[in-house]
Length: 407
Image (cartoon, rainbow, N blue to C red; front, side, top):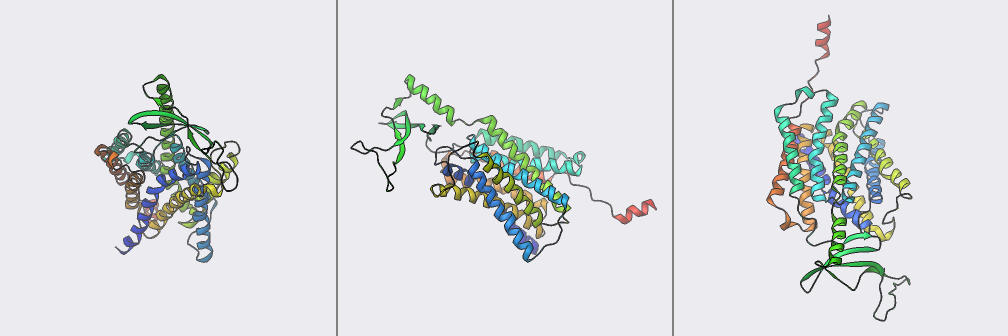
C-alpha cells in the first residue's frame, strides 16, 4: 500500500499532463499564426525544445549528481532513440491533425483510444503471444472501434459561433448578422484608415493593419452569397482523409512507444534516466533540428519574436506537459507501479481530462450530447479492457530446472 501511495501521484501527473496536451498545443498553433489559421513547424520546435530541457538536461543533472543503476549500451541507446523518434513523429501527427481542421475534442480521445490497442499488438508481436488472445481481448478491441466511430459521429461543434474562414494571408470570409438576418462578407488584411482618410500609425510610425470588412454584405440566398458561402464551407470543412491519417500516425507511433522504450531500458540494465535522455535527444533531432531546416522551404505564419510570445509560451507549455507525462510514467514504474494498472489508468483518464479541458476552454457545455459521452466512455472502457485482457508473456522457467532436464 505504501508503494501505491508513491505511484498514484505520478500516474495522476501523466494522465493530467497528456490530457491537456492537445488543447494547449492547439492554442499555441493559433497564437503563433496570429489567429489566422494554424502554424505547424514553429509550435513543433517549441515542443521539441521543451522535451530537450526536461528529458535531457534534467536527467543529465541527476546522473551527474546522484547517479543511477544501469549502464549505457549501444543497443539500448539505439532502441531508446528509436522510441523517442516515433514519439516525436506522434507529436507531429497531432499537429497535422489540427492543421487539417481536426478538433482537439475528438482528435485526442481517438488517439488515446487507439494507441493502447496498437501498444498491445506491438507488445504481442515482440513477445510472440498472438496465439494467446482471448475472446474478451477481441471484444475489447471491437468496443474501442465502435466507441471511436461514435466519438467522430457525435462530436460537439468546435465553437459557439461561426469562425472566420482564412482564405489567404490577406483575405477571409466571415458570417455576420445584420438586422437579424444572416449574411456573409469578405474582410481584407489592410491598413486602418481614420475618419479623415489617413492611415493609422503606431508609436513607431508603422501603419496599423487589421481585418477591414468590405462595404457589402451578401445575402445567403443570392448567387454571390451562395458562391461565397460555398468557398467558406470548403475552407472550414476538415480534410477528413488527412485528419484520419494524422490520427493513425500518432496512434501507431505512440502505441509503439512503450514496448520499444522498454526494450531500450532492458538493454541498459533497467536504467530509467538514460533511455529518457535518448528520448529527449531524439525529440531534439526530429522536432527541433529537422523543422529548422525545413522552415526556409516551407514558410508559414508566425516568427520567433516577442510579438508571438503567447504562441511560443503555449507551444512550449504543451511540450512541457508532454515530457512531464513521460517522466511520470518512468517514475511510476520506478516506485513499484506495474503496467497492468498504471497504463489503464493513464489511457483511461487522459481522454477524459482532454475532453473536459476542451469543453471548458471552448465553452461547449450545451453542445455535448449524451451519445458523445457514451461513445467516449466506450473508448475509455474498451482501451482499459484491451490492456487488462491482453495476452501476457509466459514466465520463463528457472535456469536450474532447465539444467536438470538436460542432465
